[in-house]
Image (cartoon, rainbow, N blue to C red):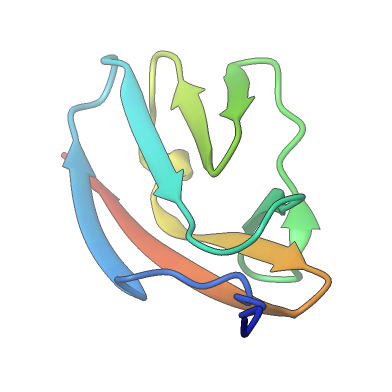
Length: 99
């Protein structure tokens, strides 16, 4: 029997998402790979984590979601979702535009 170790990875590496100012916007990050798997959200530039009063996080297994409440033009930009397990890591970039 051969045991396969699957590193964390994403099927897509770039997603474009648009939202309307004042509305709610959900960013969904679904990774693949062996558990345990850690998912972190990072906002560019500066690779800082996303602590903000209008942001709610939900994580379960291989998926993580952030919900931005009452989005504003300042929420536009690139959001990085980083997944990692003991066998490797990968990133997904979500480019958000606000109208």
